[in-house]
Image (cartoon, rainbow, N blue to C red; front, side, top):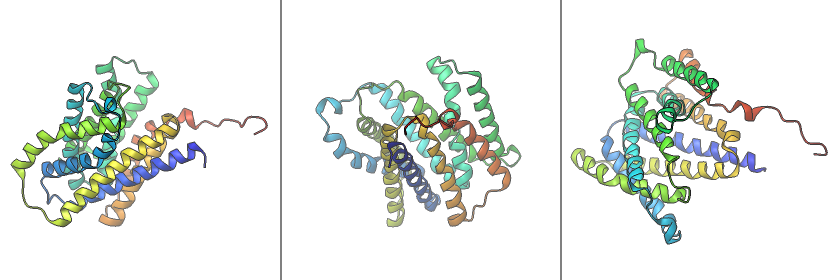
Length: 285
């Protein structure tokens, strides 16, 4: 198997894991307070990451740009909280379609925060994708939980944008470790305020969600190290396919044709069309 095909397979597996994590959250059905879920997930993630972080040389374990790391840690808290509410109250396909607006939101954010100048093509593609979000949400049938789905998309976009400011010498494991650790104080306070006893089943679902999200992060890093991002990013769209199918099978959430059209409008601008162009094989190949 070539490195390119292996990278796509890893990314598809990662999106499968993330989709199953969404099922775990959906099965909680709001029985666990949002901040309690976030705290337990972040604590478990930290425990899973710690051995990998500790094996690194001391220099690579250091906290660099702590203010930026603190900001990104709290973006995780806000995004995770919004995600739980959105998935609990919206169909899986609808919630995830709005989550996929994050890359589209990165365009205006990159202009405002990084002073980047996007091409006209990117601007038009992003506008097309935003119209797709409106089609999915349908203002005439607007559900309040959609605001939390948009909140997740915004925090994801900010999280990705701020990643460009991280020191290049800092490893992925170290980044994940410090963002998890720095998110604990605030999440612990909020968790204590809203704490309530939870069942063993709910605890297992939270732990499963945390492990699956970490699996996605690890598989995504492994994939993008093996192939250029533009050549394999299309595999990220497999996540929408998985959650749509899971929604139909597990929760009888059959999307109507308008929702499917909106999802398609959101996904199309995210496809790296240039990398999909046919390239003739070299002579002698």
